[in-house]
Image 1 (cartoon, rainbow, N blue to C red):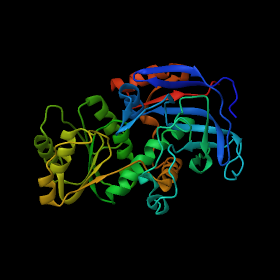
Image 2: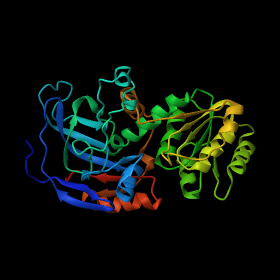
Image 3: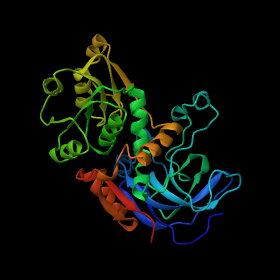
Image 4: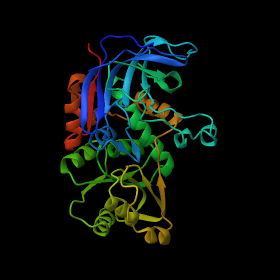
Length: 351
């Protein structure tokens, strides 16, 4: 049974309608834990839900608490939970798969047709207290800060993306987009041994950050056609790339990736864009360039993301550019929407 108390939450009531509301503190049921939220990163998905009322064909049909990139501390443990105890700090994997379908049983539960993502029960980290399934909580070692812990979720996306792309030691990689996901892809491919990485964007400021955190080359593609951008990339590198990680969801960038990728390479689409777009599939077919999609991540990707940060192989701290208290969640969303930030972090704890 939920209890009353101080549980300030950023609740999306409807399209473009975010309100700070004191909601009941939830109590954990079997297999669940109660969490005190520590830090929560703002994602482009949060902005899209706020501004457009849904994403990827999934509409918001009732009031939900926004936020899903979170670090928390366990405050209560429900019956049946043996893997966690009060006081454990964790990163949480959002979403609830059915665990019964063929994809779930094959270990690819990210493709579960009944995956529940935008649901009131577990969809909400911009809050003081929440509940979560214990099986989808990942312990954070002491050398990972609360803010770093909140970046584990988007880092897991890029870990999975690099697995899908088959990034290998010595690869030459193009990353389209130097937002937070693009830069996390950059850090991940470098940790996997890619030797040459070129990052594109239309913002010189973001490209400066890409260069700072390890990009071999950067290119501002503003005003370029896909063919022109691909030619410029080949001119800089002296060759076409082995793999493109497309992190913008923009049609022209997908096309650039197809043109810039070598024969037998692949374009892995990390960013979410229009569900229908016009791209040069004939060119991809003639070059045997595979086009691969990704959807979220799986359990090992989360575990490996924690290991990458704990080991020091991936340093996410330079990507956190703006910070707000929970009470200023709307400002955090507006700052993310403006495009001036890389990763906006909200401090949820009230002390």
